[in-house]
Length: 68
Ligand SMILES: [Zn+2]
Image (tube, rainbow, N blue to C red; front, top):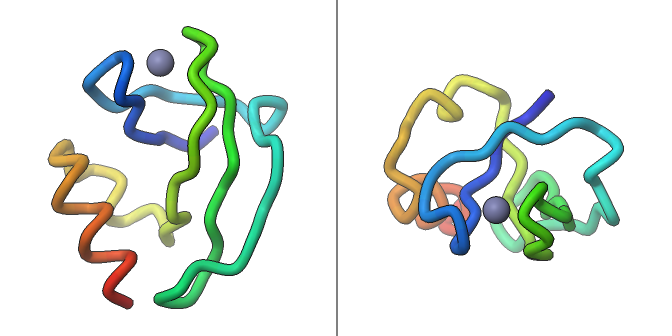
């Protein structure tokens, strides 16, 4: 299980590995996960080590990870 920030939900959503569409290198290191949310939204999320996934602030988490 992993969590992403879904713009349509406007909050964190837990997804399963089956919801992963693709993996690509992220600018700041690590990977960008291409995902499909349970609501049908498709987007990308920078993968973390799990620690920061407790941070509910989506924008902050995104910016931190994309900055490397
Ligand atoms: Zn969603």
